[in-house]
Amino acid sequence: MDWPQLNRYRTANAALPDPSPNEHRAVFFGDSITDNWSRKPNTFFPNKPYINRGISGQTTPQMLIRFQQDVVALKPAAVVILAGTNDIAGNTGPSTPAMIEDNFRSMTAIAQANGIKVILASITPAGIYPWRPALNPTPIILEVNQWLKQFAAQQGLIYLDYFTAMADDKGAMKPGLASDGVHPTPEGYAVMAPLAEAAIAQALKP
Image (cartoon, rainbow, N blue to C red; front, side):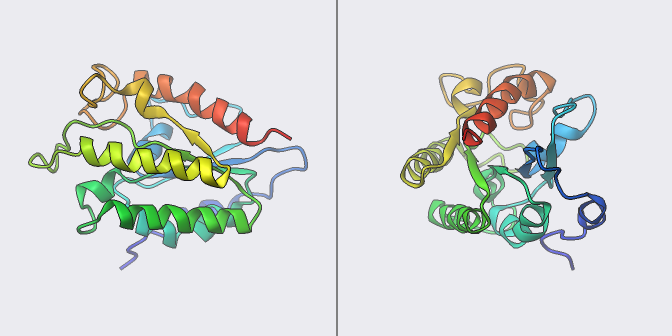
């Protein structure tokens, strides 16, 4: 009955040493789009002090519960939070944009209380969810992304805009960047990676 899946990374977290004095550790925290980044044939930032703590299918309330264990306890300098698409899909029940935004606020507050720089990633584009074909997610994605951008500006956070680079003119994923319209292909991650690295560099500027 491990609803937030705290057991997924518990052993790996316990085995992870504290960051070295000059290590600028970053945790990538999210759902399947983050989780799959470390699965072959994708390449997840070789030789970088970046840690993947994505869990497929997760929603922001699940992520909020595991934020202390899977982010704070790892003592990163920065966290990249990519979430919300599964909330919109209703993976753990109905969820409004306000509910999603509250969870982003809470994760941000926990990170800031622990001296962790926050990078809020846009929800990536999707014209349809294969597991919820009757839903039109694009308008809700746009609404939450606009809020994330404004919230980041208000709080002095970094907004990581994957959406603009990956969306077609209708707000769906560009051809070739996702295997099913939602989950990135290696080509999709190749678009995302330099944007993420630039955002981390910006967040960690002295």
